Length: 380
Image (cartoon, rainbow, N blue to C red; front, side, top):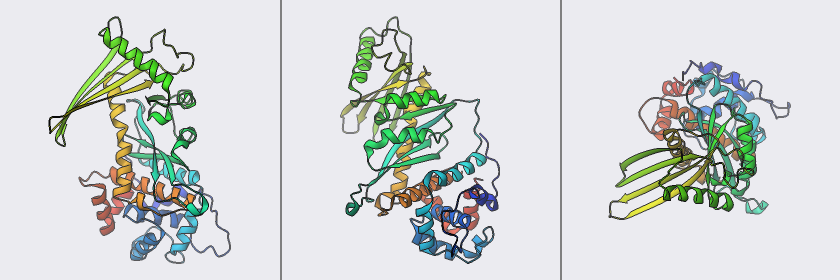
């Protein structure tokens, strides 16, 4: 994977094709200027239009070095109105073009790991209009730390309908999609395979028949010590945070007599993971998870796919702790969606900088030092 040079003056070019939703009357500020300003401010830790305006006012001279700003810094209300009017999918496309040009992946290596998961903005509910908290389903390139897209829903249960929409935003060939049990649906598995991608999907009680068939198959093979069965295996051991975690991963090809083969023709392998934890107080706990796969992976790659899925949870933690997303009271849905995407993209840019520091630390550096901010924006 290589990282070509991206000039800060050229960032606006990725948004030139974005349609301006504002009325031409009294349009004083350029759309590209406002979008680039919002990205820069979010990387510096701004949490909304008011903070973006304050930050830009203090960085006016630096912003003029690569933005036109014909009428000065746009007001808080101007920034807010634009972010409320831009359609999220079109808005995200500019960022996707930016990151695609800045980061070129090697298609000849292992399939790209992409985790899909949902996150609720807990304080964004609007009881007066009968709206629950905004729920966002996003795609995250686990090994690269890149936000690839997101779709907003009103409820966590709507992830089932949001995931197919999100998959349409992703280049599926040469990818390995990981999804938790909420996404264990026939239509989702079909869409991934038809898009020339592969999947590792967790199986839980929301698919009781499938789970029963898988657990029965795994139990039978373990009882027979996997005799006459082709299987792949991988083990890891990790001693950290006052506990010892021993993980065991196994997968087998789907047997010819698998009961649900006709209903789930995309399943080519069955996997399981076992975690045994030795706690510092002497307690021992264990956990078993089951998975369906569209490809018979190596044991090591299966383990990597399962473990890497938690990187999207780590990203969600960063959004809440560093960017305080869970505390946001933004109720307007399009504005909340666009602000959340800006935060995810800010995490992407900050993670890409090689300096050894936390996301919060890098964000503070950007706020204090324009040269460091330029390095982050240009993915140096």
